[in-house]
Length: 310
Image 1 (cartoon, rainbow, N blue to C red):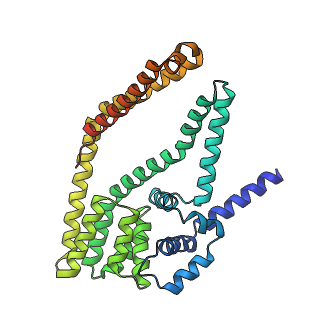
Image 2: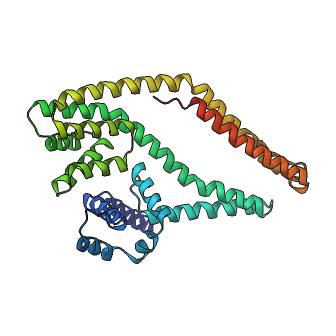
Image 3: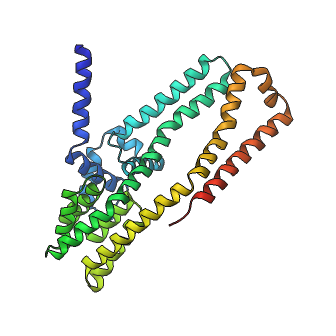
């Protein structure tokens, strides 16, 4: 019990640090320093890089690691990137052990290694999509809140602060970041560019373009935001209808993609001699390659048909 309570205490302390505003600010500054952002002074960049651990310095030299860190930020994942990489390694190792325990050869072990190792990345992609959809659902209300704030006589910066304070995540965090960055001296254009980098959606690009035009030539920004909010609500409504109409096709595509692999694995487990002929004979190997190619092509064709742009 003492050991369990100690682990819980360590985890809660770690989670509290990761959720703190100071950690979020440090993380954003570290990203700017690693990518050599031109608006960041050289002395501040050097100070940030010196404060990084040797492991972080080594990992962030790789472009794939920086892309992974960006993907984690877009997915809203709060854990440290090193912890995530460790979890990927553990999943892959568990897959290899499971495959080896089945006693079907090294090929089967590597198949399980790839499948379980890919699960964290699939989860990241799903979380990124879910977060983008949630942002779109909230964005129209955020624009209405900004329009009401502007009509009440507040400035654009104050309207951004209101949204960052009153709305829920992920909208609140993105607008709060824009407000904090422009408060600390960054231009509003660069702050919006960082916002798009963290949540690249069509609706957000429309909003940034509208604000940029307003800052260039003036106009009634409150009315523009109200019309944009109405347009976004109509697009969300149409998108929901499209998902209902294409639900059967999407389910068929997933079943057609997974079912042959599932049946092949079951056949190999219960009748290995029946399946081993496929890679023992040259013609069988060609058949496997052709079947995989047609499966992948068919899946992407179905996905292309049902992916209706709105």
